[in-house]
Length: 349
Image 1: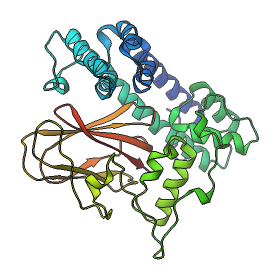
Image 2: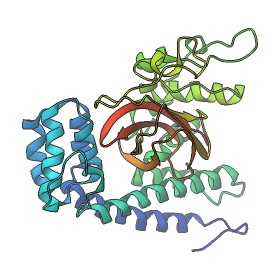
Image 3: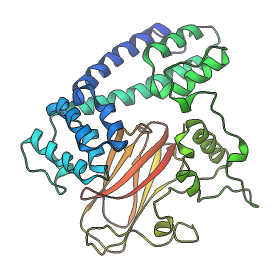
């Protein structure tokens, strides 16, 4: 790879690397789920019924992905959930149940693992390109050339950069951007939480999770930036906050009971929020239940980006979050395939 004097790859080298990487990504996407992964995940999370989803799954064949199966399991529709176990059993020639669902080896696993690695490489590549462009003082990375690369590859990790670059040069916003990433979507400061008399922002911001605030990238970005700059953090939001944090919101309170006849009370917290590289999983069990807790992370498009397993024991566990994409992440906490908790965290730069 050719490099500039400071060791940074040249513009043409970046372009060649991107071309090769996206060719591999396209090949992986075409193999997984018959090329319908995103359509399937969108349909499932959008509440589509079995009659709508089943024909799409037939096109996936034996290459149905783990991401799609996990989306099926997360559906509130029991008939849609059942599809996951049926399909997993068909493609593995085994009897798949909630007990062994997370242990089966799918025919698509190798390709999906490659797809994940390429997505992480995509994030790293565009981080390099953006950094090189911002430091450029000799026009080694011409604006028109960078814009041409953005329009050609349409990288999701660089959408916000593409929007800002267009705004700075007086160009129209690229048509391939998600609506929430356009610079035309701004948020008034009055719409954000206010600091208290001690100068700290509130830890509990449940209303911002329930009113659709996080559905808009620019609003979420403004909120996260404010918390980061103020040196504060907010707590994850659960369906019943008092069940986790207690009525005083101090992070100590009641905990959740898995709805499976177990008597053990469970509380899982991911801290800090926002985070940069490492996450601490703070787990509380009123008694050892001899099981494994699975934590799954999804990006803003519902794509699974990491899975971690921890013992179902009280204590802190640390997760290396450097490979997680920046921005809003949704996570689920599962015990034996049952989702007992969901929440959101933010990875900052």
